[in-house]
Image 1: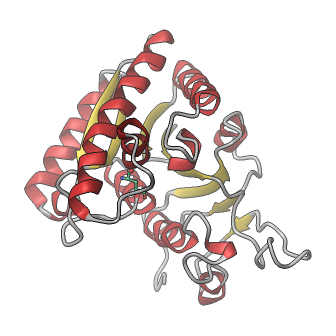
Image 2: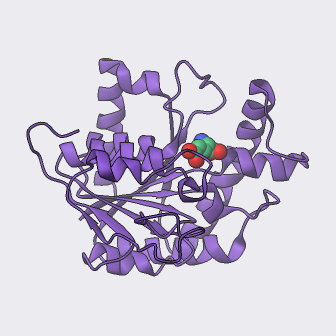
Length: 260
Ligand code: GLU
């Protein structure tokens, strides 16, 4: 199976911006094991800006573009250093790919990306992708790694996209406010009712960005790719997700006319 796994900043760093060693070590172990079992894995990893904030000793996430880009430049380096170090312990070779939205929109550059991915996977490496934050200003950025994960999953014709963050999945209501809120295990189609559950960005339910996750689900569904939203705090859940067991929320991928 070919799977794209997106790790959110909260899965990699503490709120200080420093590395969450326990989380990342467990995650690397499970992903290495999935590769050992014969799966092709591609990581889309956030965390560059946060790690830059930690390493530079900044008080908070920068608001202005040049500082954000400087933090990403420092943090991306650190991020890949950590991945290289940890995956090497399990004999896996990592490869860094940095993309922007304009790379995907341009046919020639997208083809180059797809060719490189094909070759990296054929060589058995573990591609680790992030937005090229040091050059991606708003006009040319994908903007969020949920969408980037979906773009990558479609480009390489993956079987599955897993979006890991600090939320368990999609709920029927805001679980912070409504004790009757239930986790929705399976979504057949991203309808207007499902979209309404995402709420506003920044509201309790939207923590982790449910809006961008539903956008990603629409993209993968059109290509017949399943997508799962799950909590990255428990990396061993990836085993169950790969076997199709109910974990988090699974959006079924199927090509159909008139998909929203
Ligand atoms: N590219 C950003 C970073 O690495 C994260 C964007 C996102 O998580 O959506 O810091």
